[in-house]
Image (cartoon, rainbow, N blue to C red; front, side):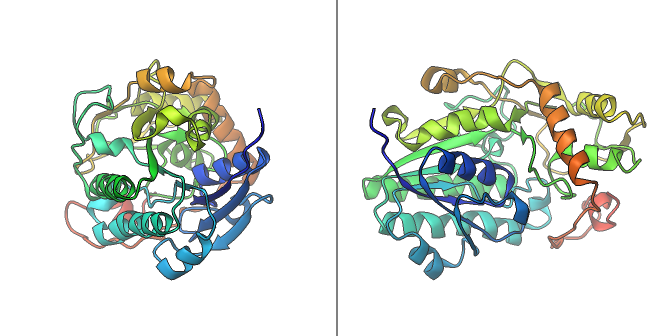
Length: 338
């Protein structure tokens, strides 16, 4: 089969998911342009084999220039701080919803072939897990609301202008290149970074919240075919394992075993609006994308640990301001306790 080279824009190319995705697409022979505002990424994450621009997705005029002759858009950029969005709703909404509208508008204006939008499991809210794509979104916090609103704008603009769209819904991706000095998100990386500094893991509530975690390579195995697989147009697809649901307490135990640091977790009060059980069904991904888990949770955490160990621990970077600071705001954030 003849290779069909595409010009592809990947947003969030210095971030965790975007850096892996853009590198993979470039290695496949595509012409990849990456953009990032560097809020949630590392400079050395940016692949050497792509064209990179340090700009914000909300800079619409520059986005329109970069979008010229682009065939495919992967919109991965996000300020993916679900819990923090309750206390910094303006910043989170701007960086998610308005940024998405900017990207989608420029892409539609350029008449791209397809837009792949990385949404979030937060779209499902407190519905009964495991989450299925047939469930209507029920967002419970500003971050989730911004993601669902972005989905609706995407579908509205694309359907009107005959542009293909796919909505990917990754569930808790882990692996190398994940930002591990972010105090607001990435529970596995936060725990490892703390433990390697001789600090106990912090758990909100009783730790019985359940999650599923997907290793980055397993996530990419679904995202890459979304580029041009015909039967994926207008599909919303969960990406994540459904054979291994785990509590946050168990995550702390696994991280302790891998790091060799055995400290009793510090339990803080529940975070407002935190979804207790957020796991997914992978039936649709298996059916349409032949999805399967190739890296177990333990293996994924081991690989994440090796990455952080190689780079060295870092102090946590509180780079997003708390906009609502009151008695409900977690002390770990307002007092910078992480």
